[in-house]
Length: 258
Ligand code: PEP
Image 1: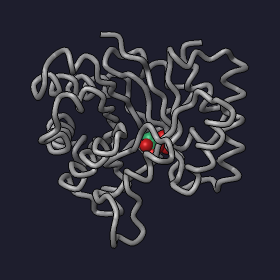
Image 2: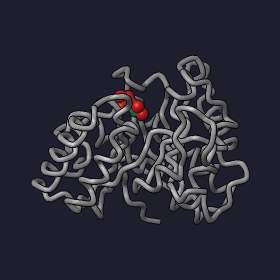
Image 3: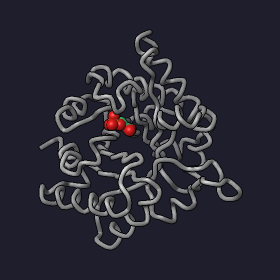
């Protein structure tokens, strides 16, 4: 099944709302100038919560074709959860996507597989598409255990998720040792794990559903290495951190085919 590639820029905790507006306009101009076909390669930005209103205003006002989403959400809908942001609020701000289970959340905020599972459920409850991050630490890769490790994370996150929802999930394979380090996985390494993820989706659901799910690679993706990674059969896009806050670089990543 043909899958539309997705290039998603995770801005992490960077850019205030004014900088966000500037970046988004520059990204949009650069892509339009290069006649980017947004239907052929989808582009999304994932700003901090505080930028979402600004991004929404620009996207709606200027009819931008860039999609957007948040970097996290609460497992709760509302209530006494100071500092949390619910999926309902994100949906009201027009978000399409929400990142769930990023390794920085797992590492610095002790998010367990069970919390990640609940966040996947919360995303669907509010009509958001989760970009579910999975990936192994360096020791796991050195032990050659990357595939079982990632599949265990996948199983846990998708437990109890109905096929009608799983059909739209986006999975991001992000080896932890490659995030923000400049160490990029080889295209073969990315393909090995992305193919294993797809095969597991076929076991959990069916081959048709697995064939339609987008599996992204993330970890030090840049304009110079994206084409080789995107040439792999089971890689359907990239989750880009550092390089996504440079609009020219991110636009080049989005235009990897030209
Ligand atoms: C990320 O934050 O998801 C990421 C992949 O970061 P970077 O591209 O900087 O490695």
